[in-house]
Image (tube, rainbow, N blue to C red; front, top):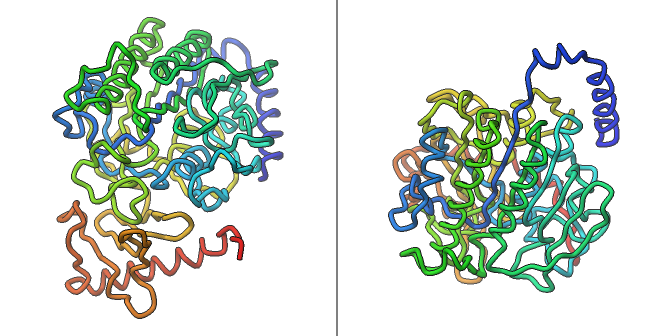
Length: 444
């Protein structure tokens, strides 16, 4: 089913839903609200509940205690634009044409309109909003995000370290407008606008994607938080995120919709210049190693998610598409998704991953293949050189990691496990055959 056909069927479903009696609607109950808070460059080890002993995150730590924490959750890329494309589409970014680098302010491409986003899949049953950073195309037809299923957009076109930068807003019947902005008030403004959306839709089901710019540089903490953290400015902005999460949960309780609302907190990739990768190898942009991809993930919905679950089953942000649509009892579009429904990981202790393997990309090249125990790394960085470790003549440079016993990815165990190496090599070749033809043509 293409995007046009899917949207037509959604309209038809809405017309059918309008024929349902109020009594039947009352019996079926309200669809759950969905909130995804996406931090920017937040590291795996930057939160107290993930082992940070310097930065104070009591609200987020409480969120984890009252919900579920996934300890082997990946972004679908080690940099911003492709990771966001993967989250919204449920597909590896190479399928969307956005796997290479990030969109620069001079670029003219974006998330294709042919891609169905989470927001589109949830409509018309949900009010939808994206508040914060977009970074998936800032020229027509890819801009603004209201082109991609969001009723409301309020935020930035791309990263706040790019110029020119301005704050924009768009909504039903409202043309794109430019608003004043101050760097040290961005996180406050994002949370405030997100809470306004919650207020306006407290009596109906809503989907809010709150995409923060923190803790991506430049670090400009709000005056109320500046100088408060032992981790200096980086800690200040993370603690400001935590305060915003506290306000969010308080507002949900104020409206009596706390138990009706699934809240997820995660990050678009690993930490950049500062921040903690939690002992994982490398950082944002770091080829096939864990530190660029593995990110914190916490989900909470009292009454539906049992408190205190910790699950190490592997998952990825591409899984949010089918999971959120399924959580809402919605229709998953008939397109080829790479993501799988991970609802069981959120609700059942020790539930296994639905994935047999995950593919990690460095731009459009496969950098690693991950199974639950094993990882085969075939791309790394050395100085300014991106090294293909399994290139002709040096296959022995590729690294087989036993992540169960070596989470820091220090030792190659391929000589000890030849059968595992053969299996991982075969997986790599199948993935290359599948995704290689999807690479975008590059200028000669």
